[in-house]
Every structure is written in structure tokens, then in C-alpha cells.
Amino acid sequence: MMRVYLLGTGASFNLTGRLTTALAVLAEDDLTLVDCGSNVVAALVRAHVDPKAISRLILTHEHPDHTAGFPLLVQQLWLAGRKAPLPVYGPRPAIGVVARLLAQYETSRWEGLFQLHFHAIEPEKHVEIAQAAWGRIVAAPARHSVPTVALRFEAHGGPSLVYSADTAPSNDIVRLAAGADVLIHEATGPYPGVHTDGAEAGRIARDAGVRHLVLVHLPADEAAVRRIVADARAIFGPNVVAGQDGMMVRPDVGQGGGR
Ligand SMILES: [Zn+2]
Ligand SMILES: [Zn+2]
Image (cartoon, rainbow, N blue to C red; front, side, top):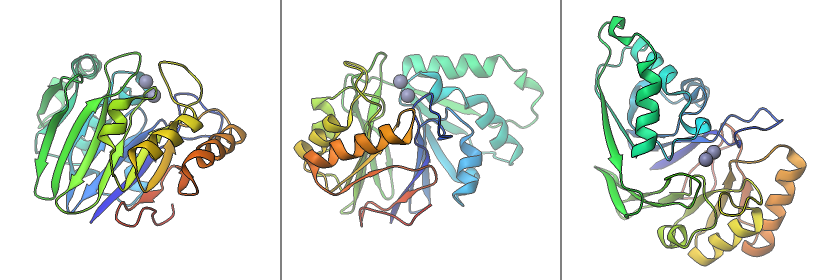
């Protein structure tokens, strides 16, 4: 069973209280956290997911709305009693940002602090990030203002999920998402070369042949969000929803169990 928890669904600034976009993928008992711009531990707790169960952190890119919560995440996991090393994956600049952020704090006095194992991803290649008992995680390049990776979670013989990260419309992501059960795609609005609007997200979902489209990284106000969803539906059809903070999605059934 794979479950995806949308911890935050907002763009970097919005007027509706959405947290910055982050998500967690639970497959059997293996928990992957993707991005940490906000207080993701609080969001996990609200979703009734044990933050101590995090198996790995993947940073899609270096922007503050995806990385700024890193020192807080480390502090909270330390206080929660984590002992196991935390593997952290991301494009090299993103790894550099979070390492420098944490270095601003005097962590040598944090007795028993777990180790961080940093792994740089080369975004220009399609690479396998992790193999687990349930399946695997693959990265492909997104098209953004800095090196960014999109991710595919693929269970053995089971459901598949793709997360675009921040990106302009990208054929690499169409290929990465081919036949996926659920595509979680950003729909910030019309920022050519940097972000994606609703119609473009609908076209990517249609071209990739996914079953369901969930929109995240949503803009300033809910009227804009409704327009974005309508634009995506006009191209992809009815299986489009705007993500909400706290929403759970089950890729095997497409849509999940509420907040
Ligand atoms: Zn970004
Ligand atoms: Zn962003």
C-alpha cells in the first residue's frame, strides 16, 4: 500500500495559509519526505504520520520554500530521539544550502545528534535514488531556474506516483510520468520557463496518460486556484483536484481519504 500525504500545497507566498509545498510518501513502513520549506514535522503529526519513521529526505531543489525548514527538521528529529543516520538526497546546490544552513547552528552541543548522509543527485540524468523492499524511487530533471529533480515512486507490480517538483512544462516529466496512477504536478501559474499553469499541467497529464492529476504549489488566492483547476480539467478531464494541506492520496485508487 502506498499513501501520499500532502504536507503543504502552497507556492512560496500565498494568502490562504497553505504551507509551502512538501509531501511524504509512505510505502509499507518506508517513509520518504520530499522537501522541507516549512515545519514539516508539525504537518506529519497533524496527518498522524510518525516523524521518527522518516527513512530518507529528498530535496527537489535549493529554493527556500523547499529547504528553509531543514535545521528545524533536524532539531525536531533529534529531540524526538532519532538515532539512525538520515540519508539526504538532492541536486548538489540544494545539498550545499541545507548543509550551510545547519552549520549556522552550534550542533556540536546537541548530544547524540544522528548523522546526516548527503547524496548529490545529478539532475540531468535519469537516476535511481533508492531501492526499497516495496519498490524504487527514480529522479529525472525538471525545468526550473535552478537544478531541480522530479520524482517517480514505483511499487513492484503496484501503483506509481510522480511528483513534478517546481518546473516549467517538461517533456522529461511527461516521460517520467508515463502511465502513472497519480501525477502530482505544480500549477503555480504562468511564469514561462520556471513554472506551469493549469492548462499546461492538464496537457502534461494527458500526454503522459496518467489516471489522476493533483495540483500543488498553488498561488495566492482560491479564485486563482479554481481557475487553474478548471483550465486543467478542460484538457485532462474530471480527474483533477487541487491539493489541500493534509490531504492523503492513495495512488492505487487515485484519490484519498480526506484531510
Ligand atoms: Zn523553486
Ligand atoms: Zn517552490
